[in-house]
Image 1 (cartoon, rainbow, N blue to C red):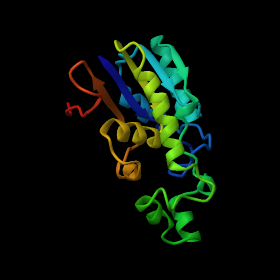
Image 2: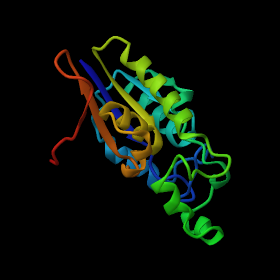
Image 3: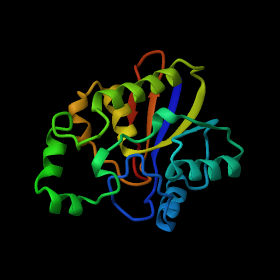
Image 4: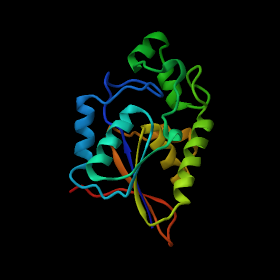
Amino acid sequence: MLKVDLMRHGEPVGGRRYRGTVDDPLSETGWLQMKSAVGDVAPWRQIITSPLRRCHDFSTYLGQKYEIPIAVENRFTEIGFGEWEGCSSKELQQRDPGCVARFYHDPVGSRPRGAEPLSDFMNRIISAWDEINDRDQDIHILIVSHAGVMRAIIAHVLGMPMENIYRLQIGNASLLSIRSDDERPPSLVLKPCN
């Protein structure tokens, strides 16, 4: 049985921005969000993390605390936002009213100048994901990454067109599960509230 939990990083220093590859660390709030999301239970046998500090720092902390091996996966870096890197939505709207809405409605044709093409991003995420799926299936893995990476994996698992990935809203420190077994293909698992 394949067991993979996906976790988005918490709030970075500087709040909401199009960071992409900008390497901001977690804020105090971000650390609290991630610790709260994990709680006192760490069932994972391996942690795979983006190399960016907002993911890697927490993964290192969690791995050391629970003695879980960590692997850095460079392909799980967030999508590059080109000239939008480091900008807030408000700043972008002041420069070019409507640009954010155009992007979310057409992320392929209205991507920011210099941004990583969505097809290239999807291909690198899916290649890393497929390698994880080809491993020994009897392991519980935590992947600590970004909203874009989680969107790409979810879209791949559910067979969504890549143009629709921004219809998935993934909050800071979100944690979700993907499971598969001999009877079912990989499936998104939504757990009930306690």
